[in-house]
Amino acid sequence: MLNKAKSFIPNFLFNWYHFFLALLGAVLYRFPSKRLIVIGVTGTNGKSTVVHLTDKILEEAGHRVAALSSIRFKIGNKERQNILKMTMPGRFRIQKFLREAVNNGCKYAVIEVTSEGIKQHRHRFIDFDVAVLTNLTPEHIESHGSFEKYREAKAKLFQSLANSKHKILNPKQISNSKCKIPNRKVLIINLDDESADYFLKFPAKEKYGYKISSKFKAQSSNLQPKVQNLLYPENCQINQNGISFTINSTQFNLNLLGEFNIYNSLAAICVGLSQGISLEICKKALEKVKGIPGRMEEVIKEPFRVIVDYAHTPDALQKVYKAIRNFKVQTQSSKLICVLGACGGGRDKWKRPKMGEIAAEYCNRVILTNEDPYDENPEKILDEIFSGFSSSKRKTQNSKLYKILDRGEAIKKALTLAESDDVVIITGKGCEPWMCVAKGEKIPWDDRKVVKEKFYELKTKY
Image 1 (cartoon, rainbow, N blue to C red):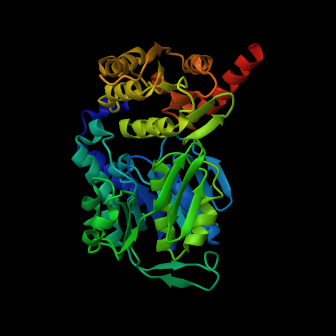
Image 2 (tube, rainbow, N blue to C red):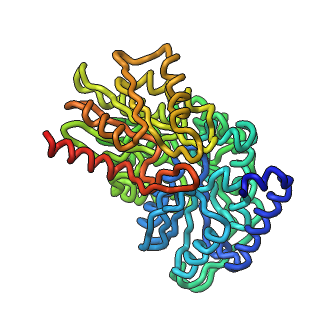
């Protein structure tokens, strides 16, 4: 009914509607962000991981922190799972979260910021102090109209930094009495991303950049006028158990998988450094992290590995497959088996063939299955992914494909195909608690739980 109504109402009215709700939410909860140091993390991929890692660094430094992401809501030492199927909550909910953070004595709030949230003014009347860009690749193109407009939406977070003034924190938030926090607006940018220059143009008191490209040293002199603080890791190592790198003689050994998690770690370290936290404290915090829920999370270790990841864009999918390919091969016969779907609801249909093409290139066995079809025909979604698989000219050796609409049965099939030294990778949902189907129905779901159930079912059977 609402979708039909939208077709008759001018866009500018919806725009004002969302803006008014944002203002009303801020007024109702008395502009809580003015009493917090607020860190906004945006980008296409890696946002939840960076929020999680940043939270750990700030806590290790002795601060009380609130963190909001697609994974969880956390205030101090209390947290709950984000079951909204919404990365950035609505205006009233997010302002209430910030007010609760203030009331619970938090000094920092770390928030995952999405382009869809920005489009609906959910970032409005939140006084951001630090803006982080993880990366930018095509996503939500149908919603925004083009990649350029998608990028412009992300940029509004960075534009908002220029508008705030001094903040006052109360005694619960800091050890001394009420104290003004200076207007230290900070930008943190992934310099290896193609959109880095676009985001560096926004004004800020301090700009941090991080980069792992081997060309960094040659480019550093050119970057210096744009970025005052450059972070470049050396001796980067990536293996099947984690990642390691060195920054200014400080060695980091982390229990995170894939090169992309070096980038995510660097973003969080930059936040720490911008807040006066030492590399040693950053190291101590990050080395305590055993993994991120639903992000390259290893669910089964033996006799083969089963990994669950949220990857739902072509760029993220390729990076996940590439990471596993780089560390998985122990014998010539070992296989990479993937369970793959794509979100429905008319969202980013363009990416479906591309994801099928990527799966064909990296995986030996591909099981196409349901993800979140909403009101779309699930079979049609699978056919669109298959079109990319079938047309791929770079299929991996002996690549085979199966279509199993039932996601539980698809996972079971992947487990039956797996042998010693193989890796099964299940993407698209991560730790999401629901599967969204027709007529607005949500089915309770968790890929990780289903993997364990099917694995022990098969183990018992044989």
